[in-house]
Image (cartoon, rainbow, N blue to C red; front, side, top):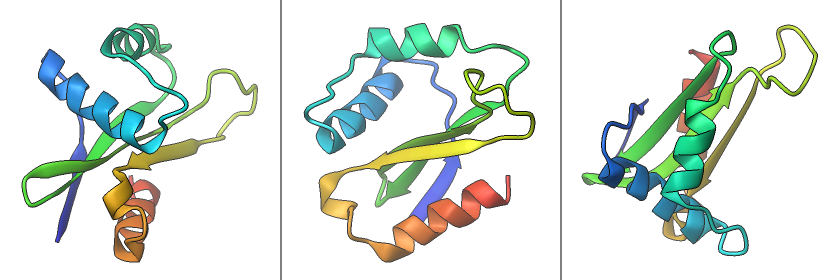
Length: 105
């Protein structure tokens, strides 16, 4: 069973969990906590952005975000993305949960 919720990082350990998921999913595009904090701290205040996480059995298995892309000059355009630990990539119910969550926010 999965639980999805907004993510509000307050500690380095919380960011480390997100970065670990991203790096496991994208080993050719490794990232760092410093990079994530840099981008989060500089997101334009007038543009929507919300990170979310999915837990399974008390473990974070997915990280993602939905947002208004500030780089696209297109009013009312929204995008979302997520990364999942490789062991969970083929879980169709997980992908449906994420899609449903994003569309109802």
